[in-house]
Length: 426
Image (cartoon, rainbow, N blue to C red):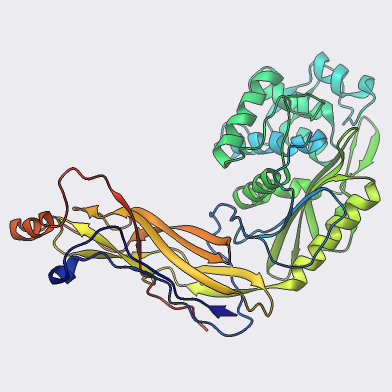
């Protein structure tokens, strides 16, 4: 792998005699051995819009493959195309319930009432996927979650929605609020089951975001997705997610079928220390859905590797300070960063730190002030926040007067770029 240096001057700055406070130009100083590997170990980062430049092909019309630890998108095909989701909506139903459990509002042992509506529209009389809970019974939240996630029971999903919010439509508002919180801008939910609705849609990338959030925030509750079977009302049913038995290390999540949209799957698998998330949508058959998901996962596990970029306290750049005791402050990422890249890649990488500046004193240590971006060609591989590494108090009257010589009072903050100081570790 090779790395490229770039340089870019800010739009304005001090005169040559004022070098102490002149904003630094942009330069990316990156070095690493051939075949270097990269990922973000910081688990709270959003998905990064990066795709591996490979010849991998899939037969399904929409798909994405995401590295869990970094959020790096390893493969995409029409991943933001609008799709009718069907039963994979229950992943969002679970996410809303998981939030309430984590917040202590309910527990797995909290009983929810199974209304006639839940029984008639989602249970045995409906003829669809059902847990077969008796009408007007009280059922534990933990059991309803198994019914909704293991066998895609529509009665269980409706009971969860009504038990938490009173009505399914009110519960759908919580689902959309959760989607907005996660940045799922291509999704809209109208019910807890996935029943057809022209105003209910999602896409592959959004479902990967949702899956990643659940695995990260609720690892114990996530295990419900892998329960092998359940028995209710003397009816035993096996987990409908056939990816769990594909020998690929899968432990979640859910699949569905929609008459006009095809066969969908949202899955996750672990091999060694690496977890991947796969989404395939619009497969023509159950077999194609399973095979394409398995192929994507196998390719991902064998085609990529990691390389450490920066330790959390490594200075990656500096931001100019106006009116401070010093003229600039170091910037750090705050968390150890790595990046996932194709094995033996020779593509050039370019790093930039950008921020709105100059910053105005006083500046507190740990303040988020900009972004570190890493690009490979035209693709943004990494985009994470940077923070100030030190406190900067207000400077003396003389120091502030010097700053006044090059900064016009009232000027709006400018988009500046600064030097990436640290090099990749070997």
